[in-house]
Image (cartoon, rainbow, N blue to C red; front, side, top):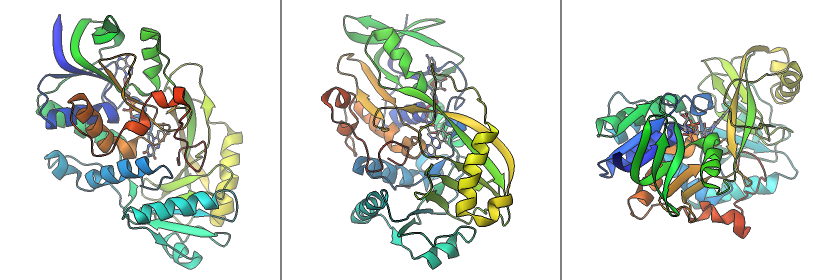
Length: 394
Ligand SMILES: Cc1cc2nc3c(=O)[nH]c(=O)nc-3n(C[C@H](O)[C@H](O)[C@H](O)COP(=O)(O)OP(=O)(O)OC[C@H]3O[C@@H](n4cnc5c(N)ncnc54)[C@H](O)[C@@H]3O)c2cc1C
């Protein structure tokens, strides 16, 4: 039977980052297994938005540490061909008077106290950055210049290529079908092509983390939720120089960004369609939903009243009860370390999460504590729910 120090299940942006960081930190005998191809899971469906705006302080810390990687991605990977596809256009977030205002104020205050460059803007300043939107109802507007969007598929591929160059074995088209156990301890995985032993198994399976529960009997607090994304073509264009925009005043807490040079990518930041089973195949985007989102867009972007639907697609979130990830060991399954439940905001955390998970596996201290993300928080009733409540702002 083959044997490795570490096996990583999943080669999405999280698994690839874990593998790269393991190798960069000196691990020698690492195997990554994916039943599909690198980045083919939910990473390829990501809207790619990068911000440090969160109401949960540990998320701010992970996002900030990750931003410093995205900003100098090729240098960090020591690979001049590596690109994250970063567009550094900034992140604008606004709330009118009402229930979300206090959360926005507290989150902006925390960001500034953490040394993150964030400015408060008046409506005229906001309109100078995003002239296609109206801000006359805004009670508070924050702008984070060190933010924007990038490409999760490119990032997953670059981490995977870098990991391979550093000696990691990456095998695609191999399905993991179970965990090997000695007593409680996880000692490897069962695959369609045979059993493989490992000192530690890292699961970065995203929505498919539910399989861990079926294999072990230990419940995994994650559900698969489908979300819809639209690309709208309106006048004037939503150019890449314009910031990402989070509209806390809209019923769906819309997020918008430039897409393909001139279109608007837009989606709701609230709950999506709960799926019975994990499946990232494309789902329907009904005309009712297009009309519902379109009406919210027209409310904020008046000239987009006549925008056309250029394209639409769906993607699936791995949602936990508090919309924050589960990171670290599973105490009832020694030998297993997990990183799942990113609830629609995992791409922007992927470099720092990969590093912290690799450090945990290697018994090293982490720069950002993973304690708040323990799976035990659910049993203890210590949920990590952010000030915005349920939803991917967190
Ligand atoms: C529509 C949408 C928009 C999003 N927008 C943003 C955003 O703007 N900003 C942001 O930060 N985040 C965003 N996210 C979230 C972010 O994209 C995800 O958190 C991140 O990509 C998850 O990466 P992952 O590696 O955990 O999962 P995945 O990419 O899904 O990778 C999991 C991998 O595990 C493999 N796998 C699972 N089970 C097995 C098995 N049994 N055997 C072998 N292989 C297995 C799968 O094949 C898959 O490749 C968005 C997500 C979606 C769906």
